Image (tube, rainbow, N blue to C red; front, side, top):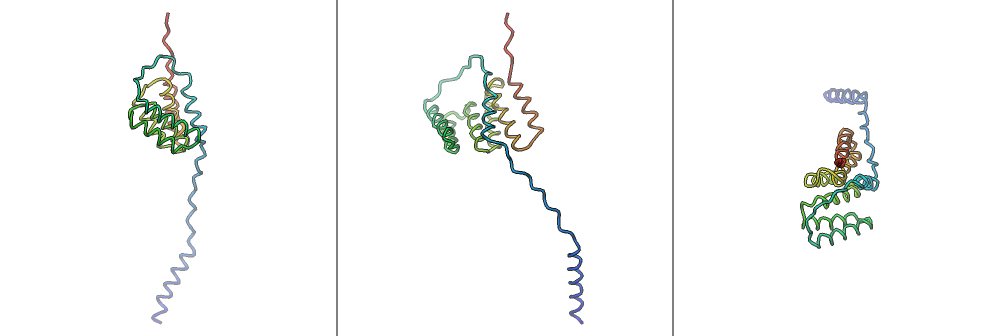
Length: 173
């Protein structure tokens, strides 16, 4: 009879466990379906036709242009890792070049690395002009990244920033 008591307690525990309901299934978040190639097109389109003033840029080391050519060639072949590697070589020679940083942001977008793209675009914005084509591309990168990350509040703010990059020319008489 000594063994009957523990067995009875065990049976009661098992009976109670059988009555409990299984936990509700955890809802699965749908996979991100934002098209990186379309996002890059939207980013580049955001900057089209905005620069009508003369831009002064310092002369660059020809090696930078060589690395950027390699990056563009690799991008054309859809070899985004090689394109980013070549652009990174250019950045080592010109670490504060906002146009190269934005190009890296676009390559990261094409690769679908939304957070890296956004970080590179914001660094480009902080170092670059606050109006014009590059500015619009910076903020459109944020828009595209936040669409992919499903962050509606930031999307709306970033879209407003894209509009702010478009400064109308002064009226001259």
